[in-house]
Length: 162
Image 1 (spheres, rainbow, N blue to C red):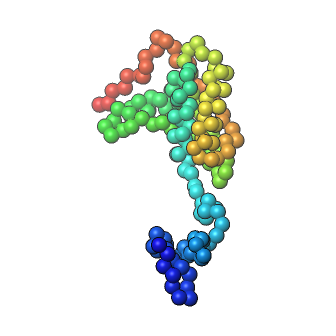
Image 2 (cartoon, rainbow, N blue to C red):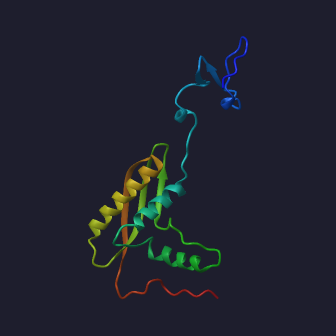
Image 3 (cartoon, rainbow, N blue to C red):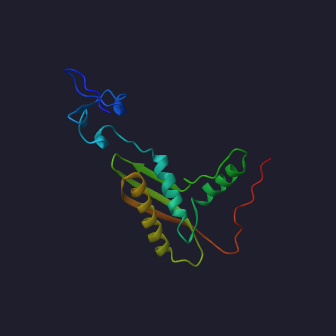
């Protein structure tokens, strides 16, 4: 139902609560014009990209863990503290600009896998996930293989809190 008022634009009840919207001859127009996607700015924190990259890297077959031995040891201690949580950003460093990002990953691979194949798969998976989820262009993904997980090694070093 359209309410016609003398000398003013017609207003419809559905858009009555939006004063920036007016109806002229049955067509709604918004003041301010232009594409809504250009009205404002979106910023993405480094931590967001780190989490996306960390999860994408862990999804690749042959990646045992992320981070160096020392960071994994400290992480194991932190994970055992009540209220602590597993860090998906361990072993991931990013630099985020306005439209581009660069990533550094430190990974541990399983023994017997082709390191070059795992690195390529990690790079592809991380680039696809980050670009799809953030819209940022990934300019580089540097991968450092810091260790190889041998089959007979313990899963995590035993660390006791006293």
